[in-house]
Length: 206
Image (cartoon, rainbow, N blue to C red; front, side, top):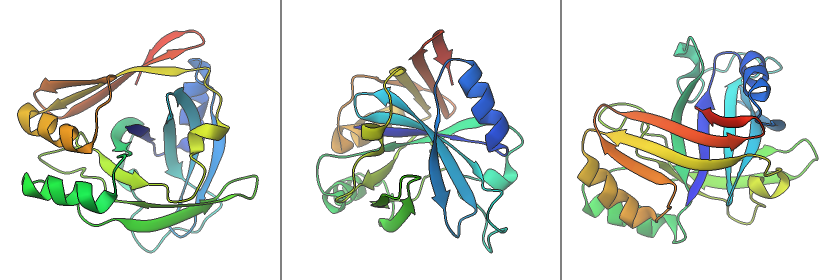
C-alpha cells in the first residue's frame, strides 16, 4: 500500500549525493516536463520506493510554482508519501469523502524513463497544508504502466514509516479505507513524517 516516499529538495544533485553517501543507491528517474522538476529513485522493497525530487536545471523555469513546495524549500525534507490502493481510486476517494476527508480528483500525468519507457499514472494532489501537513497520503493509480519499483534494486528496505498527526483516530480511519501496511506507525501530535530505511551501511532515518 505504501507506493513511495517523497523527499523534496531545492538542490537535487547535493541531496542525491548525501543520500548515496549514507548507503542508499539512487538511480535517475526522469523529468516532469512542464513542471520544472526531475527525480532520482531508490527501491525500498515490497513494491515501494523513495523519490528524491527537485528542480530540473535542464528545463526552463515553469510558469507555475514547482510541485511539493520545492521553490520555497531551503533544505531537503521528507515531505509526504503516496499510497497505492488495491481498489479503484474513485471508490476510495468516495469512501474517504464519507469520512469528511477531501483528497480531490485524480489528475493524469506521465514521464519518460531514461530507457525510453513512457510511464502514465493518475494521482490526487498532496495535502501539504494544515491540518494534514503531508502525513495523510496522496493516492496513485499506475494504470497499465510498469511500477517503478520493478526496475529498481532492493538493496535498501523500508523498516517503518512513522506518521504523526493531530487527529490520529481520523488518520487510522483513513488508512483503513486506503489499505493496510504493517510498516506504518501512527502517532498523535504535530504533523511529521519519519522513515527508517535499512541500507547497506545500517539504518538511515529520513
